Image 1 (cartoon, rainbow, N blue to C red):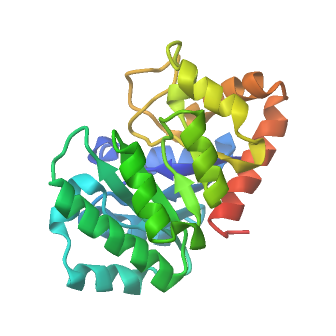
Image 2 (cartoon, one colour):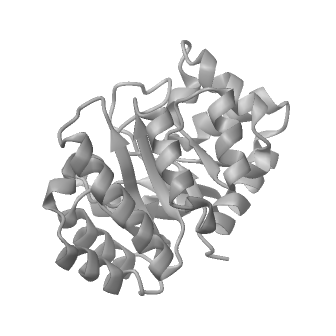
Length: 255
């Protein structure tokens, strides 16, 4: 089975056929899936998905683009939800200086608060970091994010930063970008990082791999990521699939 460690099936891109797609995935070798919240409405939708589908787990957290929605009251609400059996992480949280929808000050405040939330509920974190490499790392180090561990989602930095996160105890999330012809840096990271510290992810409906780049993504496309990763590692697809399935279960403490 293929473990999708990061998906957004609550996204409106799936409104027309969400049930049909999700029902088809286990029979096509996809299970489990972690549905990752990005905003407060997504927290509610994610919890509902975990209740409806036995193979879906979830995270609670707010993406840096949406942290203006947060308050201490909302943090306490997420803390309560985090106690549910199928909520396995706090995320996705972090910094995004590509869009800068929220100010750096606001992003930092709620990133730190959500790192603290993860410690309070003893769950791993799912980290979003875009054009904020050193700042993200420094905050995580200062606030001892290694005590919860987790995943650096859609890892986009180089080997040196990968080494720092591995030393902190994190797994690296790798998705469709790995299949792109111009993804030289990510391919170098995939070659460098031990297989037992990699999880694969769709980030669907975004980031579809070749040959479906630019189309709506879903978990069935993970076979292309697996194939590319197996080629880089010089292993069979089945060997890589089994390894990253175990990694996903380990980091999210599912099995």
